[in-house]
Image (tube, rainbow over all chains, first blue to last red; front, top):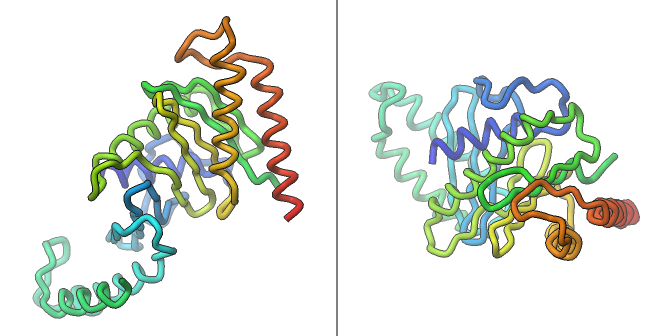
Length: 113
Length: 141
């Protein structure tokens, strides 16, 4: 999946019809640089994607007919900041094992269903 | 301002057989359009593999920050996709209509070789009309 998202990002950056100066296809870009995408839809699922300035990517896979989930992704990022980044026992880059994050995430995802 | 930025047609092996630009900033050169097309072909294939439910037929709509990409795949594996403004409507209909034009003016052309780049005058003319009509319809709304 990471490969797909990574390539889709370079694809949209190259495709961007509103800017003339885009560089080559696949040129490395910092988070927030270049044109990115926020979701794609197939006949069986919809994938919503967000990338934060620190390079954390949050992905939601949902039913194809769900609406815009950008706010939900932002909210999940808030949860991540609150319960993971501010957890003194968490070292960045390692898998997340924070109970508070898990429970509040579960609660939130159930509430948007 | 144009509602549609560009149109691509890719054959079943990922080769670009038709590309038309309708006024996007910084037109793509031949090499880039070929690469972008084959990249899209693979993205489409991977998205089918990633589906949580069986029977996925690939990306239909990609929503980026500055454009929407609508893709239609025919039964034979030829893919048509348009890059348009975010939120543009009726693109599925337009793609189906372009597919119709493709079958009428390209596939029925005795001089056309399958999977090769499309060079058919009648197709070009009718396509230009279809896109123009769509633009007028969008402006009227």
